[in-house]
Each structure stands twice: as structure tokens, then as C-alpha cells.
Length: 386
Image (cartoon, rainbow, N blue to C red):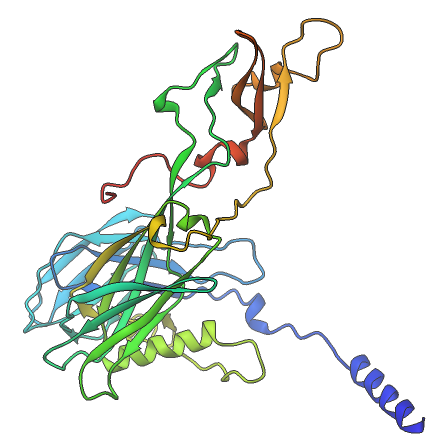
């Protein structure tokens, strides 16, 4: 009994001694430059995204760096300007760089600060061999295969873009023009859409400890069996970047600091030193690492018939059909059909007509989330879709 009381008092004492901890970084007003992208040495565009860090406790989640001058420069003073595209993005068409030369990125902000990355040699990037998937109990695991026959690459990074065809829960055959409910034309389709997502995690692979430079079934992402991404047709585009060992170590450390923290068993956070420096203020940290490589990419499509037939996607909203009748007496049968007549701001959209013999006496409708796929996607089919 005494032992139980002792432990109870000990636990109460420990709990009462706990104090909230608010690290100074949460309220810090320092705004550091973040540089994302690679110098593409091949036949595709070079896209660099510039932004500033934001206060964690603030409401702003994105702060693009605007009106900067961005150039790629060679070790023989050749200059390749990038054009501002908006939202902090700067781009140039295919540079087709000389693999014998070294290159760096130079940034001059509207405020007059100058940032320069270290000169880097062009890192040759072998093609992606294949993309595949493994059917598992709870979904599919997508993976990538690649290899370098010259045994020179060893370090890789990947990004991906997902696109999928999906449907609204209920197909709307009618639309309000403000004064009447009329049949919906094909140009007014809001039933079938295309969704899109891009990768947010850091995906790395290395063959440095292998005899051959081969990457086999490196995991890329998982898609749940109940995801509507697999409802009809799904596509993934994977982009591959070749890294130097230093670049790989930077990304691995950044991954550890951003994705692998949270429990007492995880590694302690550490600084991620990139290869970009502020020449006007050498003490100012800069976040990012600029590599020079030709970007390789590959796309695959997966159709629903390739997957287990008992996989049924779960619609993300709770949906029900509601009936609304014309008023032909007092009282109306249920709700007045006028609730479907509002051209904008209506919470419900007409789905089908309700007939009494040949006569339309009302309509079935449902919430916009259940009938309008454009709130989560776009109707226009992507150019690459097949």
C-alpha cells in the first residue's frame, strides 16, 4: 500500500513539474531565402523556385521571392538568364549545356542581395528503366528501376506527379439558368474530372555500397485500395535526378530533419548546409542545394481492371439525394424546387427529374460536394492522357 502511494505521489509530482516549452524559432522574424530546383543540362526547361521562410506561428504559409534577377553562369562566363514566371518561379527553355564545363546559379533580389551557388560539374543521369507497382493488402506500392551501365551515378533523387480520373458521386443531368432548370450540355459537364497531386516527401536512393550501379524497386509512393485515385484510371510521372555525394548527403539530412523526427528514438536534428551562399552577407543562412544534371522522366498508367475487383473507393463526402417538388397546391409535397434555381451560391445541384407519367413534377438533387467534381479537380483532359 505504501509503495502504491509513493508511486502515485511521484507521478503527480512529475506531471505538476511539466512546463510548456515555446522554442524561440517559432516567433523568430528572420526570413531566409529558400532555393528549389536544379540546373537542367539537357533538353528540358530549367525551373527555379524562390521563396522566403515564414514564421511558424503566423498565418502566412507561403512567401514567394518576386522580381529577382536569376541567371545560370558557366566557368567561362557564359550567362543564361531565367525569366520570371510568377509566384516565385523563374524558368529558361532547354539550355543544352556543355558537359565539359561547370555551372552555378546567381540570384540578385529586388532588395539588392546576391546569392551564388558553388560551381558544379554536369552530373550525367541515366534513363529510368521502368516504373511498376506491387498489389498489397491495403493498396499498391509504386516503385522505380534504373541503372547506370558506366557505374558512375550511385546517388539518385526522385519527384512525382499523380493524375487520376474520378467522378462525382451523382451525375448531374440538369442545371439552373437562373430562371429555369434545363438539361445540362456536354460543355457543362461537372461529373467527370481529373485530379492532380505532386510529391511532398524527399525520395532518395543509392547504389554506393553495391558492386553495380543498379536501383531495383526503389519505393516511390503508396495508393490506398479505397482511394478514388484508383476508381477508374491513374497515372504517375516520375522525374529522376542524379546527385553528387555531397548533394545526396544534403537531401538525406534534410529528410531526417523534416520527415523522421517526432519520437524519442529518432535522430537529433542537425543543420543542413547547402551549396548556396549570400555574398552580400556571408553570415546569412540560405536553404537549398543546386545540382546540375539532365532530368530523366517516365510515365505509366494503371487502369482499374488491373487491380483486385473487390477494391471499392470511398467517396470523401457523405452524400444523399434530396427531392424537391413543384408547388401545385398548398402545402407543397416537400421542399419548393426553387432552391435549385439559384444560379450561384446554391448548396444543392439538380441531378435528375422526377416524373409523374410524362410530366416533370420535381427534381432530385444533392450537395455541391456530391455533384460537382470541379471543386476538387478540372474537367479539361491533360494533353498526355490516353
